[in-house]
Image (cartoon, rainbow, N blue to C red):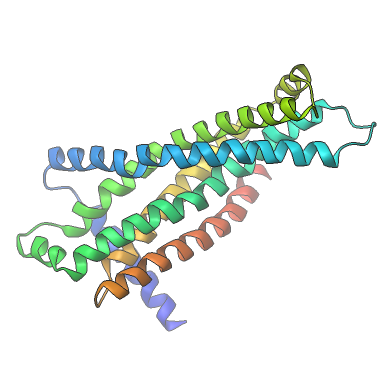
Length: 247
């Protein structure tokens, strides 16, 4: 318990350093643009592929579990839409990004720590925490909502392709289902969750990398911890935010 409180205190002290006033805004802008590419644009591929197949699986599973003639077939499209918007495109996609982006951030900063590059920045009078971590947090907060929207669109498209090609639903019924009783707030709910998850991934992974002690072996362990802790916090906040935003 004492170790947990110690780590929690170090985490918030690090955030205090991260969000202190930047020395030169131009440099931070360039760093943020670079992180847009590394953490954002490079994640579009994996999000697109996984969203497509998850949309297809959700549609087929819904179809095979609602074969009762009492249920109208358009419910397949409705179930696919709501599953993707409410849960998959925010939470499951965030877990995927925790593995890809989180491990990347932790290993990058951790390597800089063990090779004493962070110490060199401190000696030069640079706020290393803000310089290294703030652009990553800003980039993920700004870009992850776009990844969520891409995931929603591709997931529903994948469901439509799978449903019509497998012959479990007609194109007209599926389109009617995704339009039926649509609640726009669900998109807002999904994006709000995405912002929380993006901050968790970037800040927790940076924290694990920033305080690495040892060598390359410890960097690998920090990368693993970053993924595990981020995933647990994402699932925990998923419950809390669902209760707060949908109750």
